[in-house]
Image (cartoon, rainbow over all chains, first blue to last red):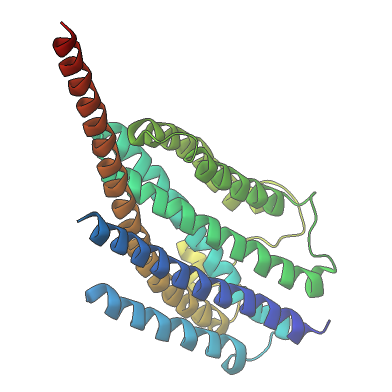
Amino acid sequence: MTDAGFVIAAYGVILGGLALYTVTLWRRLRAAASRDDEGR
Amino acid sequence: MKTRILGFVALAAVVSAAIVGLFVVPPDLNQGDAQRIMYPHVASAWLAYLSFGVTAVGGVLWLWRRDLRFDAVALSGAEIGVMFTAFAIWGGMMWGRPVWGVFWQWEDPRLTTTALLLALYVGYLLLRRLTEDPERRATRAAIVGLVAAIDIPIVHFSVEWWRGLHQTATIASPERALDPAAPMVFVGTLMGTLAAFSLAWLYLMIRRYELARAELAREEEARRGRLRAVQAAAANLRSQEEAAR
């Protein structure tokens, strides 16, 4: 693999991981909020 | 609303930092393009330290004040710290292969102590799942979080204390921050990436804390529900006994 390949792999996983974690967090928060609504 | 604005600002900052790191800053004279990995790698490592520091402080405050909001802060720091530690390790591996010739070397103290840091805080998160009692869980987690935090300075100073593949810190002291070993264009980009990632860190910490509070409230509601069910069953039993007499 070339240097560019390693750079893309590093940035791809880090930025992609940040985005994935953020989206997962939103979904978990939304699920928690909907459970609260059901509880009321 | 303010948190949402922070989220948009953080997104714009991280995208801008990535564009600068990938396309604007010149490649390093010796390492070429591989050196571009330094920006998210170092920023991730610093934020991992900060996250685990927050976990330790949250743990101390829980032990002192017995307020579960501090445990929620500690949990948020641990989960986000694990993510940033994984990013730092991954970035380091992708940088190490073209520069050192290997992805990983267990003899290197920085690499090994960082792997230990990741394992300790994954253990912290797993430990939290062992009990449903919020107070017992918070106390156990606080103790483990404090013990695990001992590894943070060991990771940081490992490059000074022992010999290994990993370079020593580029910016380790205020004097070197003003006169760093690396060119200013690289240091400026690193600082910009750190600022952008820090905004993302702050946004994620706020959101994770909100989730932890919501989970605590749900646990409390479930506990009260169980208590009400037990009280109703006991009352029912008493009335049956009285009817039998």
